[in-house]
View 1 (cartoon, rainbow, N blue to C red):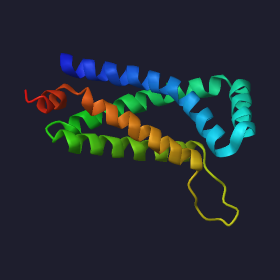
View 2 (view 1 turned 135 degrees about the vertical axis):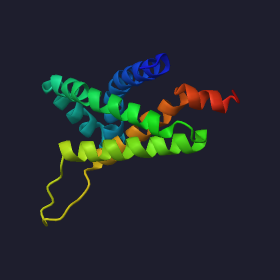
View 3 (view 1 turned 120 degrees about the vertical axis):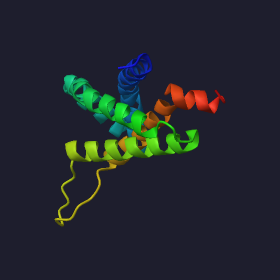
View 4 (view 1 turned 180 degrees about the horizontal axis):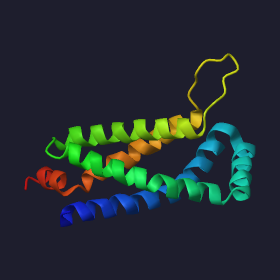
Length: 147
């Protein structure tokens, strides 16, 4: 594995951990905006009662997220920077949408399929996560600077 690939994977790993830490305030903020103070308080109470559950999800998703970052980095090498940014954001948005939908399914009483609202917010967070990765992928950063 090249030094550049190791640095990129180290960045993806660090970004995963930082982003996991940022998702808790993000979730509380979304609950506050959409549901008011009582919904945010309920979320904080649930997180406090199941403290290790978010940590477990963060650790369980770490290898999958870093592997997806490595695959995305390889697939997007050589593309125009704007295309790489858009493609990376889309890949991570879809991956996080499917992942969270699988973990937190919604039971529709009519027997149909619906998307969990948390999965939609996770897709937006995944898109933000995916937007940062190509910026720090050296071949893309070098091409953007003209090098």
